Image (cartoon, rainbow, N blue to C red; front, side, top):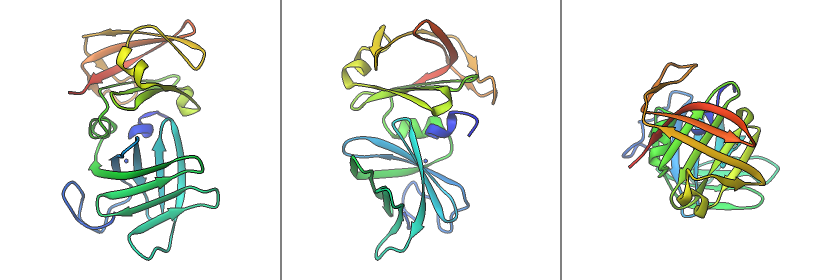
Length: 206
């Protein structure tokens, strides 16, 4: 993928509130909020792309006794039924997940409870802050993720050390247009990581 909007946007299966009626037109995007975290989902014809904490993985659909299931041999599993979901990795399990259909990464962020989101290009980068789960900084078009703790999320945008790297932000209440899509956002954001500046656009969510 060439831009980080795929991270949230960067995302079951019966018709219910917030979900389009079957059959879906692929790809279809959903956003999920769980007991201990959040993730986005992109559904294709026979596979699902899950995006979480700066990571992503494609899972093939497999037979399921109930609901719809996607799984691979490495221990990743996604189970969907109605607006409910469960997502498992070899190290963690997201349970108690509820989702909604979304049409943009910004809408996905709002549904997941994100309080601030910013994105930029060349190279692609993304910042999301969540008041409960902390958040993440994703650099290099998705190949380098720096997790933010809940404490760091509360302190944002103060200067901070994240995974051993010095990070600072300047957020201006000035309109900004995405350099690739032309989409408008109300905030102009400059993020500096170890002295290297990254420019982009941002939004706050109530």
